[in-house]
Length: 109
Length: 127
Image 1 (cartoon, chains in turn cyan, orange):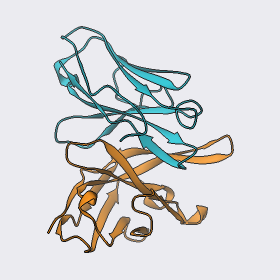
Image 2 (cartoon, one colour):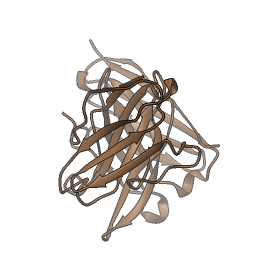
Image 3 (cartoon, chains in turn purple, green):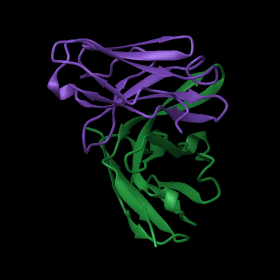
């Protein structure tokens, strides 16, 4: 059972906008930054978003992140077939003194 | 370019031991906190533990499920991170990733979140 809660699946058609939610608590998302990872099939996770809404170099601006209270979301606009992947949210947890992850959301395009 | 290459995975019996290695290149290894994260087959990600850089004490912390069974070490002269696993259980079966960490001081607490990831190595614990 993951500490952060994500929907197991999401889907969209090319060009659409989709959002993936991530729910936590006051000990993680409520007081700490949220991070997002993209894991393409058979590959290692790649950092997609840091500090709630900051994109690492090379990540298209089609990807955006936000946080409100104890929840966060990742939005992908102009959906493309290559966006098909598993997406994970993460945050530091003050109670556990370590990073915690969501269970992942499988995005189908 | 940051590169992390794990090795040492394989099949081990319950109660057995295994040592994973992670060869790092493309960055100053001795300046980076490092972590291990695992992913059980078909499951999500789980942080295993971290090691600080020498100037921050070189100390380690572990997640509750592996505390007292796993140990992380580093050899900065070889740019290599290790994960020593003992008393292995079937539930330790997973792909193990080594990661660099993004470290930040938040409200007086030093936090770390995985940044770059290796390709992973599979550990299977089965009789």
